[in-house]
Amino acid sequence: MKISFDKEDLIRAIQIVQSSISTKSTLPILSNLLIRAEKNKKGMGVKIEATDLEVGIRCGVKAEALEEGKITVPAKRFGDLVREMPNDQAIELNTSDGRRVELKCGKVKATIISLPPEDFPVIPDFPEDKSFKLKKSFFQDMVRKTHFAISMDETRYVLNGIYFSAQAGELKMVATDGRRLAYVWKNGFEKNLNASVIIPSKAVGELIRLLSAGDFKEDWVQIAPYENQISFKWMDCGEEIHLLSRVIDGKFPNYEQVIPKSKEIEISVETPRLLSAVKRAALFAQDRSGSVRFALTEGLLKISANAQNVGEEEEELEVPYKGVNFEIAFNPHFLLDVLKNSDSSSVLLEFTNSLNPTTIKPAGSENYLCVIMPMRLQG
Image (spheres, rainbow, N blue to C red):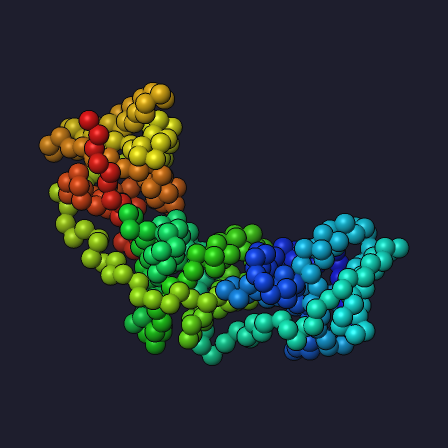
């Protein structure tokens, strides 16, 4: 087996798959990359794979190969070696027995001990017959608007991901950590779609990383939720990327029951002004119990925070409000996550009282909302 790579193309492929390389597993094969050459419709194709048994990534890479075959290489040593190779020479990879891999680049020559490729876990081919397509920008936007609310508490494992539901022509994504919730939905999809899975936070992070870094000529992502897995496939720089993830086994909580059904107060605030004000107030709410206080009076929203041994800050924003005086407090980081991921020029804040959840919606949007539990008012 002999393959010739351009250095930049090989480094790019390694970077795409490297975060799925296991660093903690007791199985040595999981710290390896699988490189395989196989015939396809266009001739001979080369792919690189990595998996930690939870998430697997397969990436096509531009290369020249004369025959089919597969090998494994220790990921870190191979990646470090490739990066240190001369820039103006092709990198040749050669093996005769699948146990020792020889690399050549100009006058540089190295040999790496390999592990049997038969021991590498199989990443199944993408199930085309179970998939549907979404605009890449649309899917990326849905993930961005929900991922920040994923719970990091491993004891509540069903909250450690995004709930993904495609049913009766409606697509939904929901994430919650019990103190906040982000929910985005869209109608107008194929009526025969029927899938509900929880995508783990690691796979979500990989999707954000890869979709935001890609150079996309084809603006589509194929998605295939099936059995206990979910697969994603897209084209990047003319090469195919396939991400496969296990889904979280469990029942996602009834998120609709925590979304307030009524409101006593609604105000509209310009997103950039509110975001800047909360950022400043957050500098004075730095301890774990620190909060930012909203105080509403006629025509004004006062935003303030204070912390012992730090100081205090407050400012006023003009708002179209004519109701009774009202106060409520929030975790500033929850507010910032919502505001930073809002595309609207203004947001609607809907309150009932200082103890019940607050709903935040982009003005003019009917398919996205966030719910935040307030904090206890101090003093």
